[in-house]
Length: 500
Ligand code: NAD
Image (cartoon, rainbow, N blue to C red; front, side, top):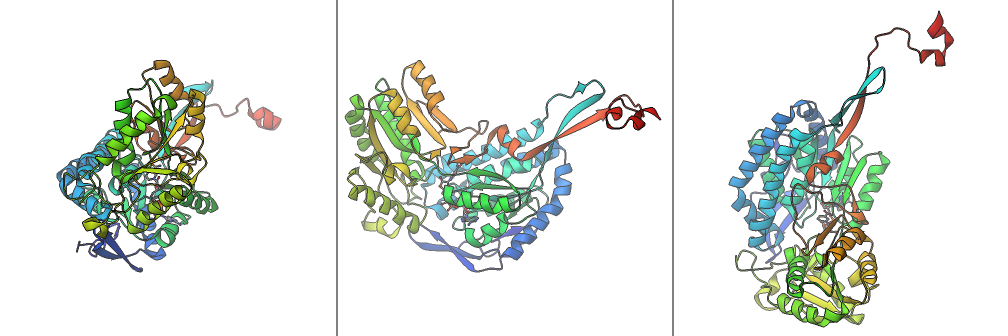
């Protein structure tokens, strides 16, 4: 059993202070119990907000250099913990250890390091005399206490994406990870305390969304609610926040298209789309879920993606040779299976996969990598987020039709276009309605560049200096320059002010 009881919550300096119903953490790759913790009740969440409010006075006044120094030390500390973090991430999510080691953990550390630098680069625009008698300047200031909610697909990365820009900008935070995946967020908070982040600056509360999560996002003392998760829950969270007039940032679901033109390097496209569809067992908000392929190369592409998909090795996530582990929970696996089944019943062809494996893998929440053809554009499998290892492939005839189909869903988080024609590439970059568009690739991210959605995928940015804007407010400071007692504009208000 993991030492979960000891540190199930970190609120300021308090540890192990959960006071609500028990929550069990399961290893989804075999159904075994990893640990149990007591959820944070509304009372504990409120105390966490108290702690964060108290800590804000000092943290917001720390110099950018001081904040940067703590985050730099945190990056070093996380680096030293990298293998342990990777193991715990795999334990609670069932994801392949290779992905935890090579993507989740190093990506998170790089993000911490980036925000250590970004903390020292916050600036407003130049000061100037926009009125002849005044100097105007801009101060960029922190907001206060941020309430953040993170999902279970990349628990450490999502915690880092939420916390780092907020902290770098001088805010304090109360962060709730998904109830099923608290381990690496707790390790992050422990590490932050160890390297000198003042107590109360980064608070973690654990528990289900309906109880702990709602208590957090309904708290009227939050300056901002930052949410990453599904579109339905995100909209509900925004409603709760709106009752208090709280600023929100929403990073929601995705249904990314990959558009493969007839001039594309087909081999590169097939490999790239399978990698982008199957990463993290498809539980990636930017995963390639819909491939639109020019009819002239459609069959060739289908054959290639089926071949590559069948090579994906499903297995024990702790084995470094495993490509894909289990899905993150049994409930989620059953939801994925039900959506594929309903596509099959609706007339779509399952070209490979489409089942939960038997044998030794039957005890985990596994699902076989799946490729589907002949689904209609308006069907559930094309329109709704599956969030599993499922790629749907559809044909198109003209560029305009491809863009229309690619944009024809409620989401707009990410998209890719595959072509060797520079004009088509530029047209795709302009016409695909998504917060990220890749040309001849799909998935890579960098800390320096923003991540965020269009349409139903939400608003606001994670990563990059753009996210610092989400977590700050700007103040106009206007300084009078003449020193005159009577100012000409007073006469407009009252002749007496000017003449007496
Ligand atoms: P989810 O919406 O079910 O849960 C996300 C978080 O919200 C969890 O911490 C959960 O406990 C909490 N929550 C649930 N109900 C709540 C409520 N009523 N009030 C407050 N909090 C509540 O999402 P999930 O299943 O954990 O994650 C998968 C989803 O996240 C997918 O839709 C995926 O696309 C999305 N996602 C988006 C991004 C992005 O950057 N846009 C990144 C990762 C994941």
